[in-house]
Length: 427
Picture 1 (tube, rainbow, N blue to C red):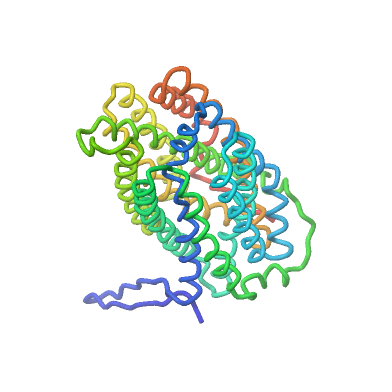
Picture 2: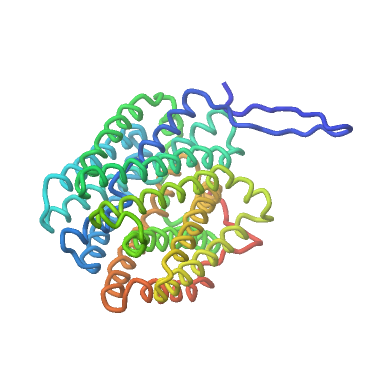
């Protein structure tokens, strides 16, 4: 059964063809995966949790570096594993690694335990990153719908963002009801156990192209055989690393905003913060749901994917720079709005990045290729996180964001994707 249906609408002398996505059982399994994956109830409060147990921003940055280092070390091996023995089983292993991480966060409290928890989280990330995207793209190829990859991936990603919106409300309720941040870790076990079952139910045929492909020598360096290809990988990984690093600093900004508002003054700081964080993240992810779902419209309107990716790269840096400046001026409602726009930009970019990378990598090596991109991202995050944490401790969150984004703007010429050649296909 094909995953794309054609609807013909007659409009006077012309016939308009609108190809829609068929929402069959497998589509909803993909969507359910994304929805459940983003029910990390601790995510809106992770930095606040670390601060609550007495960690400095530098210590927090080191924890994020540990997570990314583990992801980095295991990224390409797990990508090769997924392409060799099966992507479904690799995804199941990733859920198990996450579950172990959540349990450590909940039951233990010392810094060494936090390092262990972040290590298992990093392993889960490396097992997952690139693997599920490859499953989706393989499914589209099996059903002759590869040309709809931006729309299809964007639509499934919109369910992930809807999960994040629901996640914010549930997390806020849990923190408000229990009055502490730790409970969100044990609650996160439930959706991840359900997702483990969901992934195990994926049809075996979805891995068929891995086993049917004739074995060819693995040529890692061929992915980087041109400057254009290198820039595609760098543009994607650098922006994702930048976003993943700075987005956590919305939490202290929201905490400061919550304590400055003349609302809920009778509540303790954790409960006041939970209300503001829950509401803000809910609306942020509602908008990112819409942006992910409509990413294909950006692709259609842009003459080249490179144009959209270059412009959104610049826009993201400028938005963070302004967010830092307004935070310095203690106008925290403006940084919150700017961060909202940054989240929207990221969810417009991601389907475009996946589409462009999949154009230059063969299908049987796609998990490995996306793992390469993800590994580059983890390297950058491993550098950025302690650096930004150090700056935040020394000069404050606002100035740290301002300086960091200014530095990233200077790096733009090195990652600007060529309009003439958006990447040479891997051969």
